[in-house]
Image (tube, rainbow, N blue to C red; front, side, top):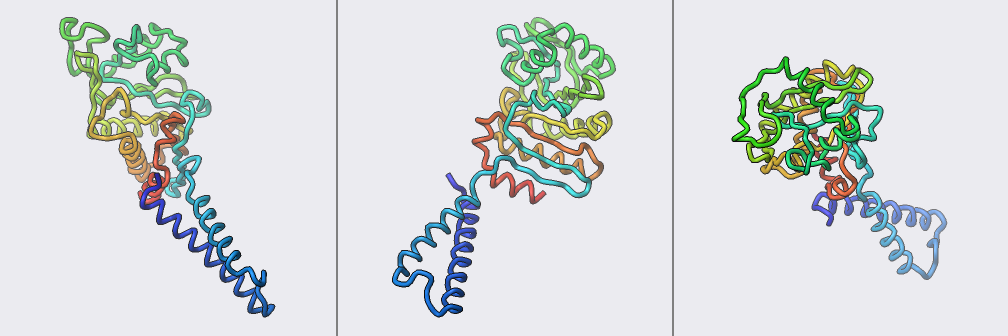
Length: 282
């Protein structure tokens, strides 16, 4: 369904097209002292009106991507449909909880179909031990804020780290920024908030600036599904991510391109005209 903004854009483009066509027809008649199609004024007017309406619809059709180029600093922001793990030329952002759990057994702790579960399968070939070893090596330098017990958390890891902790996996050719933006509860349900997500994104951009060598970065809409940022829907989360990135980019060049990748079915549900207007306004 077209929004009020979309209806306005459709009306503007349609009336503009009708006005241009009418002006051309009147100019022809004034120059040659006869109408272009004598005796068919009604049909011509109807055809021009229909063509103008169709032109307006074409101009307001959903875009294949939402894009904005920032001049200062010089970087591009894209929101596109696709597969996050096929962004081979980009560093990737992978969301984690504060316990950095990785176990996808029976979908009990981490769901195998989640971005984190796909990360384990598609980047680490399902080798949980190798991923855990790399995470633990990096976590040794990060503060532990709480130690859970097996009685309170029957499955998964027991050490909590700060929300916003960012671990840089991979190598300079392709980093994987593992960012803890949600809290894993004893009931194995992840929970986050807009404030925690903003804090995590701020630390993420700092890590990308430090380690990313300004190369392109791709990420999902963090917080949209299992992280349960209940106060915000997917589009609000997407706007929060974009606003956070633009704010960070005002201070320094974070990356030459940020690409937010949504599954095609998710992208189809996004109001792209509204999102483009928002992105252009910040």
